[in-house]
Length: 237
Image: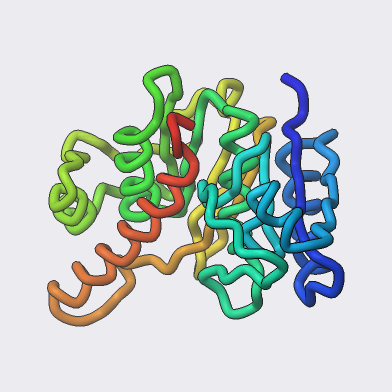
């Protein structure tokens, strides 16, 4: 497969252009070797309207905006992302690159394979094309948390038949992309050849207090995973 076409669109003087270029180049180097980043400087409001410029910095992979947006060109202005630093979240860039390289087997990893990676597996199975394999595993597998089953059932996904697995249970040779989800812990080391991204999320099972407080933490993790995995498989992935 040929490397994806990666474009960074900015205007002269954009305060976030250099940081965006550095982030995109680093992500492309990890996930799409050989995929050079083409810098496009938008010089006028007229040009911005003509090319559908959505604000600076904007990133396109194979002609598709990383947020999936189109139209609504806004001239030579800064783009607003869901972050405080004027840049898109790194995970969003990674998701766009993974969509372009189309791995056929995604592996989600955390330590116990009981909460985050189990929810990720269930959500990804519900969204991935039928020809994509989805797995999860942990370095010290235990059991699937009942809270994970409960909060996914709330959105129509049944993971009650899933079970915790170790890395030895995974066909490492077939894995094309590994997503590690640990935040506080040391994530499992995957030794196979695969594209790797790290989406560290707090462990909802570590939240103390009454059951409803813990369930709320599981829901927050569920919703963030659904947001990110939804981007992985946007428009059929």
